[in-house]
Length: 173
Image (cartoon, rainbow, N blue to C red; front, side):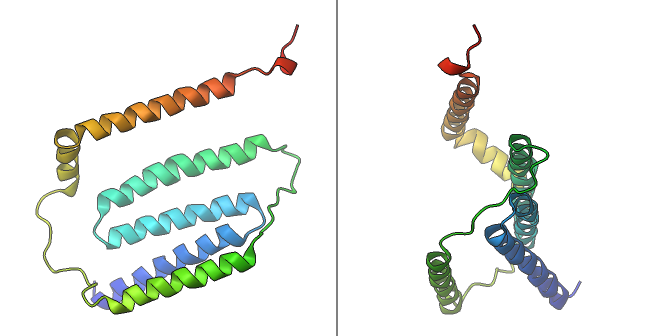
């Protein structure tokens, strides 16, 4: 494929990501926001593929789309009554949000135009990046990896405890 085709496809995925992210922020319906978040996550994964970060792209799909988004959708759908169709959110703080958006966009554009060597190099990595990540995780970063797993286990146990906690007023005699 030509370089121009890659550029067009990249801008297509970038537009999908930006517009679906904007829909997440400005939509008043929580269900629509959650489904447009799906397109935002997939668009970010596609951009990772264009950056030759295949492992991060797959991790993005598995963790965010497969885990967090499904959890969010089930949480929203199960906590509200099925007959309740008025699930709406208020879009607040439009003025501070717009000011923050303009400031961040100005900073990003300044960085983009002031950086001269932003194009990726022609040097390609040798071997599988997944193999290298696995080797580094299990050799040089074993302690942080295990500590993160212990923290996640404690968080899981805490969430299970809080979900099982019975309030004094709800006990049946």
